Image 1 (cartoon, rainbow, N blue to C red):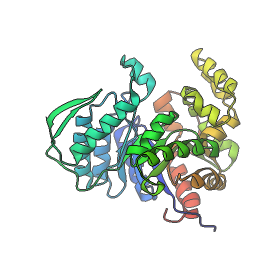
Image 2 (tube, rainbow, N blue to C red):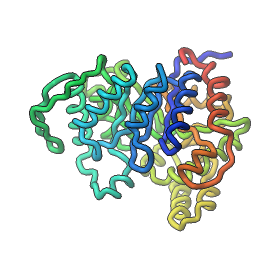
Image 3 (cartoon, one colour):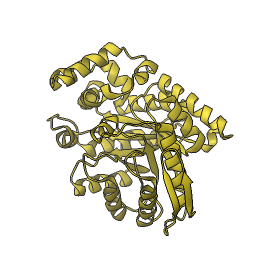
Length: 353
């Protein structure tokens, strides 16, 4: 078997299932060699932080973190408190992802995401300083704190990732001040080149190098015995979510916008069946990581590893997930079957996995 460079596979979970089922999936991820679990921090399902604490108490070594916390909805001092607490509960296994947040969720709260770069920069500075044990006085454009400290301090530095899908300024900021970047969707060499080039600008601005930085590629994931079966597993998910991506993701990935608009129009009309049917193979191949295990190994080798993305977060969809999250019935291999296929047929191809 050909052995490729080192790879870290993470698991992304939206905490929509009952907590016992989420814990069961987390335990299986740990057993099968996944390195980190990232929990979506949104208002629609179970609270991410309480869920992570429960997972921490039922696992031993897998890392845990929000992927990602919305900077506009969680004040940085409370985030620092939650991170320090989770790190204590987990025995030092916490990682942290922060981003602007889902635009739909912000709109539902009448939050206009003005000054996103300043908001992220200031939030990260306050969080980092509080976790370092400082008494913080800070007057920024967005956040202000006075004589503030928390009396719990992590035993080691918690890595901070900035979630960035499209905006070049966010990617540049990640290179400047964060430990890593976390992307979502986009699985082409063109997209990863775009991300890497922007991150390098931020690294250069801060006098840092690529060795100081971690590239984490998030991917909607499905694997099956045939290419078509894997595509069909992930097709409804992409139909529901793909059209909300910023236009620049499609441009960089060389995707025809008419295809996206067709899917979007069907979604707006409530015609889910036609939206799914209109989500064609090109969209799936460029915006997801799906296929047979051999095809996925090849995709990782050609589209992820050459551009520094040696950490990949898999969002695995199965019938239960579709039913709980989207209210649709869609036959797929089970979550556990797909996880076992990753462990048995994908991970062995990579050093250190």
